[in-house]
Image 1: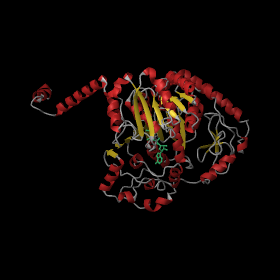
Image 2: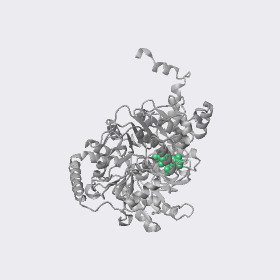
Image 3: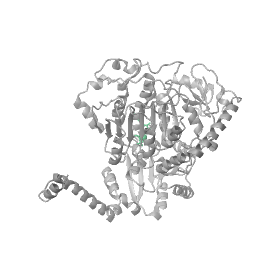
Image 4: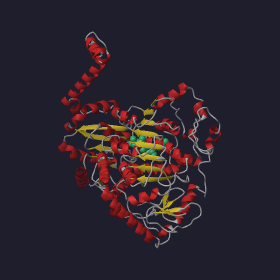
Length: 623
Ligand SMILES: Nc1ncnc2c1ncn2[C@@H]1O[C@H](COP(=O)(O)OP(=O)(O)OP(=O)(O)O)[C@@H](O)[C@H]1O
Ligand SMILES: [Mg+2]
């Protein structure tokens, strides 16, 4: 069966086995109503909010878009048939889907794998490569490697309400056979800390989950051979339906840690008709949502009826609405676009069984918080919630705790610290000398390792610095921020990952969650506003154990952060500039901190001096 991805519907063409969905090259400029004006994530929230405020106007425009798309859909009925051979397909434009087999324009979606293909020829080769036969049932096949082990009953078996043939997590006998001391030693050695009642034991290998064979095979194919510490602990906890608040270093594999429980819960039930997903993942930026959808697709590849939908601003709405019409299991969304679609009643969240809020600390800050709460109103009480970030400060954790029920808290390593794989260099550079210093770094053979990501604090600054770097150094330089349209942003991000650019100047849009695997050097040209953002930006330089370097320029403009810089960066062994260590602002902040600590301490400790004060404070007659 062939079905359309976008509104430009092709006439159905029957093909043996799995079908293709036709998708259109969308009228991006005509339909794109999102006003890209912001540079940071906060700005992005504003932007999405604005989209909602302008809803009346927006809906009219959307209707126009839809009718435009519909008419092109009607026209399409008369268009050329589905392409048989790849040679008759054109090459893609930036931002357009790409055929997974030959790199041409991915005009169709292969139903069986949800992947983009350009023609029947590539679809056939793709299915052959995937070893998929028509009607292959992913749910009933157990992983051969684990068959023997998982078929035995274990005292910790948890059934998530699946049918007999369905998957349910059972603790592997190897894990059950460990003593409590051995389990604690594993946790200690891997820096896994947990809090909560009846916390499930960590797995040591993915095979211990006994996943269905297709899922297990997809994990391997995608290169996930052995679980990272956060995955070891979070996957079994998540698979047994518990709510989780997880914090682990940048680049430590949190995405797969939450995606596996999402995929498994989506496997449990047939899709509830159109527009009713079982899993929902919220992210602060569009780029992150795109990245997570790509990883989700890798995991569900070849598993029948496991469609994902990406709902993000800045991309045309009609194809996203259309996509929702084909039984979607997992939605990955930014809150603004999601709310817009909810208001149009094109999506229902009442069947959502599992909700993920990635980068939860930023999602619960001003700007996003209201939107997240609004989305939650559409989800029923009984859902499972997974919250994740590399930084979850105490204040946010209190807020996060209100979103979960009887959660398991998982923390890997030291909480809220910059990733240890990234060498941090802090340089005292006065504002007028920053550009010169950056040029020096880019000219330094020892430090310069392209592609370099340079973080700045505003969009204009990004554009101006981009011009200056290109002119002075001659390096291939590009700026990315939220004033650029999404197609351009996608092109730049792809170019960065493909190594097309030597320097990318970015506002906060690339700061969180993005897996910039080939980036080894990050320069914080402007110190971020908070140390949490610093941790995330620095984290772009060292993914999953790879070593990287982060150079940060610091001066008195950042005095507000001096104490936190010292408290968080010093323990990593980095050398701090003397101007910072000898700063009167730092001394003042240290003095205040020690007074605060003393007061808290005095509050607890009863001494001869404070005894009367304490009695007065707790005088029962006053109450
Ligand atoms: N088990 C694994 N085996 C091999 N590679 C893995 C594994 N888990 C994750 N990765 C890879 O590690 C990289 C970082 O993973 P991921 O993006 O999930 O990190 P993260 O913890 O979410 O980081 P951030 O806090 O920056 O969002 C990715 O390239 C991912 O594909
Ligand atoms: Mg992440």
